[in-house]
Image (tube, rainbow, N blue to C red; front, top):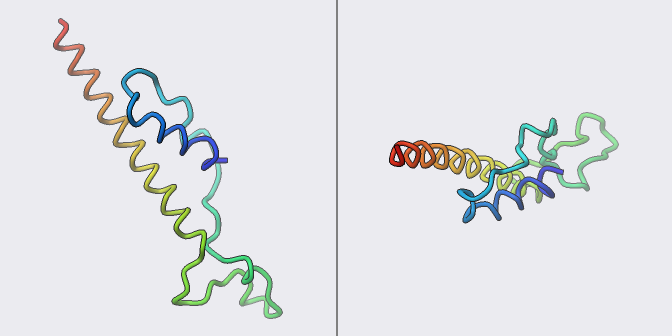
Length: 94
């Protein structure tokens, strides 16, 4: 849900952020990022090895999780910059 709704909106708002507010936020969803374990390691005969990604082999979903985290950083930066720009514009118009 987070990637389907929030990330595309953040990307589309990069250039028109001053014109419209971001309507969706990460705070709107109470979701964890996907577990960084490939599908073939979900089930194992030994219960202690279930959901354990082998060391030295990054999970395929790790890049997706990193993309989501970078998107959150970008959203924070955009919100901070826009709030500063609005404050500056309001002071200049007085």
